[in-house]
Amino acid sequence: MLTCKEFLAELSDFLDEKTRGELRTKLERHLQECPNCWVVCDTTKKTIKVYKGMQSCSIPDDVHSRLMAAVERKMAAKVKN
Amino acid sequence: MVLQAAGSLCFPAGFVNSFTLWACVAAPFALLWDNGVSRNMATESIPVETPVDDELELVTRAKQGDMTSFSALLRRYEGKIFRLAMNITQNREDAEDVLQESFLKAYEHLDQFLGNSKFYTWIVRIAVNQALMKLRKRRSDRAVSLDEQIDTGEDTVVREIAAWDPDPEQRYSQEELHEILSTAIDELAPIYRTVFTLRDVDGLSTEETAEALDLSVPAVKSRLLRARLQLRDKLTRFFKRKGDDAFAYM
Image 1 (cartoon, rainbow over the protein chains, first blue to last red):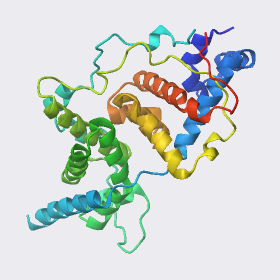
Image 2: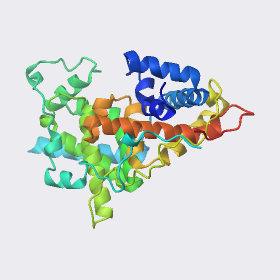
Image 3: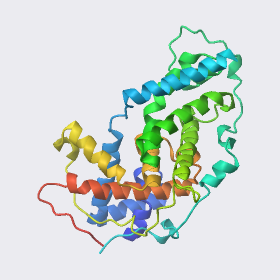
Image 4: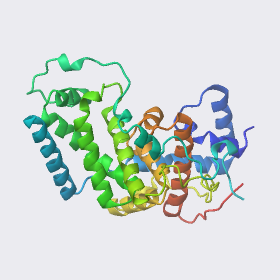
């Protein structure tokens, strides 16, 4: 039986479905037997899900305009040369 | 009692990995090459009128001098690069400088991008190094590493255990939810915030994140675990099932 420490150390790989074979079986068994680790696993999974659904970041209009102007200046200089 | 991760996940205090500014100074443009095999795409003829979605085609066209294609790449990634720069510098003015410098460098050195990795991974590497340069200028007396403030030994502690509703985010409006998530992620140390954002928000693989940040795969994995657990802890107070009390365990 895995300890909770051992379970936690593998949690990311477990959630990313990167664990296989005997280790995965042990992790799943630990989850069935340890309600606290089940909650940590479930809420970590939901944490990842909620951030995945986060809308993509937008850039302020003024920042975008200055970026475009800088790049266009660079492009124009390159064409000139 | 609290739950703490295995000792192998901990680092000695003051741990600084190879991702230091000294490396950036010693080889400022080494990062601009992706050491892959050239796909020799520059010789391919692509009709200008065709709508272009594929990133490699955009890069190929930009290399051939098509400004519209470079602008399309810029529009695709400017928001993410600005967020990354904010994550590291935590200063809007510096982040804007980093954004501009990164795209200008990318444009200038585009011929050195061989297409062996994603364009996004390549420009993230440029942006991270530009951001670290900014930090160094701000703290002129020493090297700067994204890792420098980690490892208190407390960051894999699970402090609160409480079940959440199946879809707890639905309790909040979009604006409220955005505020909750942004505040929680802003409270992470820069290296955790950066790894989590690239890996779990932007959807890069662990290997791509490692390449973008010049970290080892195990280093990305340990930072990702810490970031996920810390965010989980922070969100529990908003998302825990009503009537349940959070408690620490182990």
